[in-house]
Image 1 (cartoon, rainbow, N blue to C red):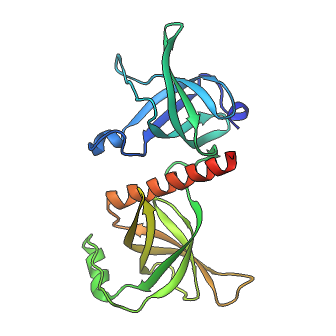
Image 2 (image 1 turned 90 degrees about the vertical axis):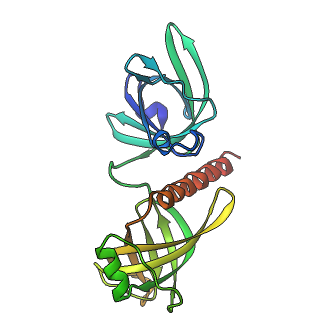
Image 3 (image 1 turned 135 degrees about the vertical axis):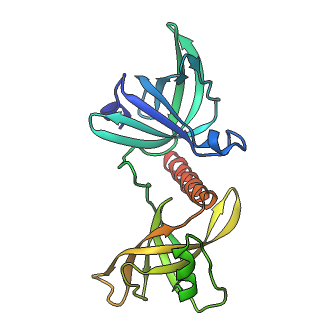
Length: 240
């Protein structure tokens, strides 16, 4: 898709999604602007080295980024790794290698990753809803839970299937585990139900779309990192 949709001269944005930039969260979330210099193959391209005012930004080799291409076909997104950098014809170049598929991307949306993950859900209690109204998250332990299955997940929300129907606009508890950085981590999150529909071929089961509420930055970045890691694993399996 690179050679089909991406052309020299088009704008590129890179945003780091791993911890390679160190412990400074401001550095990790910075967006670097560049442009396509040359498309080398379906999974490699050259871009000009980003600049800040008159200073070159020396992004390190082997660092990995969330990359956005501004093309005639619209905004495209992928994950990529810097595999080389050099100077050619007085132009400072970075060579990127794609480590996920290129896809169309809607700004202000998070990429949804298809999966099948177990999750526990329940409606929130009154005192928990009051905490949300004051911009806090308070969850009462030990209440009965319903088993659900997450079918896609993103940094902004998730879609799940359950035989329990939750009302649109209601707030629910979502508890699930993800493998992040080689370790299993439990997430206890509040979600707002945006949409509900009964599955046509499975009466009594309901698909819910949920948006996270008052999620902290650390949890959101870890979920995005989980998606990034799973995408990379999938791409490696496909290449083999």
